[in-house]
Length: 419
Image (cartoon, rainbow, N blue to C red):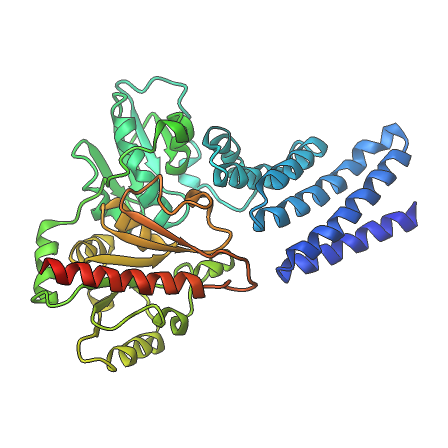
């Protein structure tokens, strides 16, 4: 049995190595053999010691399920995560990853439930100041109560989920949103009855709290009932909008906002980004391109401008030194015609403003975009462009960028006809 255990451990290590190298089919084969071997070991154990062995089986199922998930094989992934949980009920990472598979598959009702396991994985930390406040997940009545809705993950997540604040307010609660400071001014356009404070401010006395990304569960949001406010729910400041229109000057050609990378510090986000040299291939001449990234690399800007310099009717504008927060970005976005963005906060902001946005997605996208669709449940103004096959690293963007190039040319023709 020691030899069998050593072989199972070796297979697991090989599977993990293949997974890390993004060779997911090979990883699955190793995990298949590991799982077979571990069940043979389990069946040979005395009943009183079996419970101590099942966590190893759970880990094998979790690992294989994650490899299935990365290939969009969601039924297989969910089955493995269920087996991991059956063998180890407190395997919270399996519960969390199951939520991704359920949500990506469009099963929102179950997905929101399992998404709550994120707090127990150690991957997402609750800000300590929130801990003493009672958590509201839809059970207690809110009439006459004060509730704090707090951001928890990225800025794009906060933009996407702040839409639910209005529904909470409709339950008779006084709603306070505790936002990232960069989002404070933008979120004040949500509703006049909602108080927005920054994370740097002292917290007022409240009865309950709810993380923004727990609101779909608390409000019992299901896919079939529709996502609220897909037409848009945020606005730009009118004075800032006027300032941006002055900066941009007279409209002479279609203005296209660009964002090709985001979350560069997060390894899991790298698959969403596009190298600037590839991205430039999607940019036909005859447009005015405007960068929407606050931290654009000088070499990237140089390559964009070099591309524009090849055509007298094309130029690139960079206003990153004029953008102080997302209310500035919102006003700039409102001043443009089309936004082209990878899956980052710019895409969510454009959608929340109801602005036309073309979103470029990797083969294994974030769960909120579902699979195969070219439209979005979250934003009516969004069009989704997807990688159609998996390639290691950043994936294969060629087909996506060809479609962007084609659609930009068609858009220009349409604008020329109108003018």
